[in-house]
Amino acid sequence: MSVETDRDLNAELASPKSGFQGFPVDAICTGCQHVHVKQVRPEDVGQSIEIDPVTLDTDALTSFKHICYRCGSATWWNPTAVLSGLIETQRSAEE
Ligand SMILES: [Zn+2]
Image 1 (cartoon, helix red, strand yellow):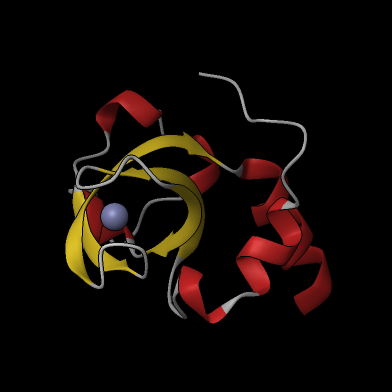
Image 2 (image 1 turned 45 degrees about the horizontal axis):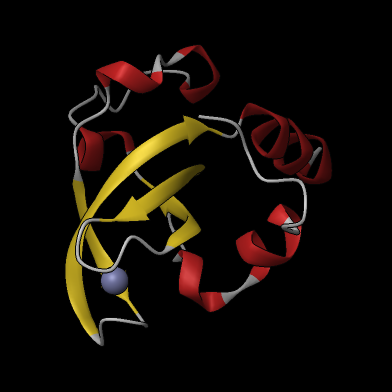
């Protein structure tokens, strides 16, 4: 699944709706099919906390629970892409 080009992923990541902890993934709400950048911790998606998120294969990630502002509740989200470009941007901003 490709990332839609009309979305501003950086703006989505900066939004409180993406969450505050972890690394950015693109994800889809299983309730309403809304797509949004979400921040997840490795343990939220069935991975070791030691792992480098840029090395993760999207297929290896499990669904995770996160708030959906469209559904108005916490729902299950399926990761569709690890946003390694945004991860690299975050890292260079921290250096
Ligand atoms: Zn939803």
